[in-house]
Every structure is written in structure tokens, then in C-alpha cells.
Image 1: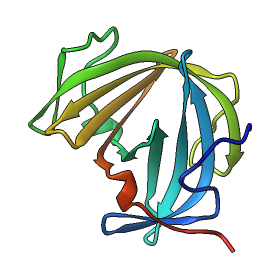
Image 2: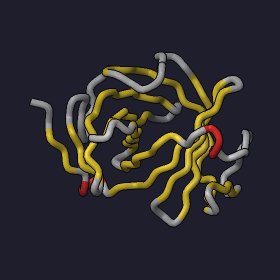
Image 3: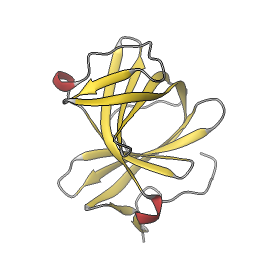
Length: 157
């Protein structure tokens, strides 16, 4: 993985709001005109979260169980609405991504070179719904945006 400025690294602990997460894995994804970083972290209770950092924006998300996932399937269009738990989300981004680098540990199998389609949809200015699609598979995540200046990092010693 090429070095780039990072808010935190594998092994660091971070505080997002009232939650503390230990960063276990770091994946980098390309969407053609740039890249973003995703981190797999675990809370003190062992729950897994994914933290995405893209151009300084930080979002923490958790996987939605299969029985609660939205019924929507690609193709998606910006401006389209999606519903989850009585909330309406507006599609803001539809792209394809490729995993270009990995380090650390993850709660799922990831591979460099793997590609997938994704959709991001926002609600209330701070909530995010994301769907990932590859082959006949799909995964959905929900989460919220965090102020990057409010992220507290305890570096690995």
C-alpha cells in the first residue's frame, strides 16, 4: 500500500462520538478518479464497524442483517429514494470500485483486484445508507457521518 496522509492506522484506537474502536484492518479502494480508505474496527463489546475516510470526510457504518436489508437492487440513479426502517434516503452516488491494497485483519474476505458496484444514499444530513453489489451478492450498511476534527486517535505504541 502506498503511503498517504492518514487520520489513523491499523493498531490505533479511535473515538467517534461515544464509541471507541480498535482499528484492525485497512483497505484502499479506487473509483477511477481517486481513492478512499476503509478501516475495519471493533468496539469494546466486539461489534464490528467500518470507517470510511474519503477526502477528509469520516463515516462509521455497521452491516445491516440480511432480513432487514432494503429490497432495492441496481441500477440506481442519483436523486432516487430508498427506504430503510421508515427513513427515506436520497441516492447521492453510484459508482464502481476496485480494491487496490489491503493490510491488517477484516471480518470478511477481501481481495486486491476485486471490483463491485456501490450506491450511497443520505438522510438528514448526517446518516448514510450504502449498498455493495458483486455478482449475485449484496451487502448493505448504515451509519453516520462524523466531524473529522472530532475524531480522537490514540496511536499504537
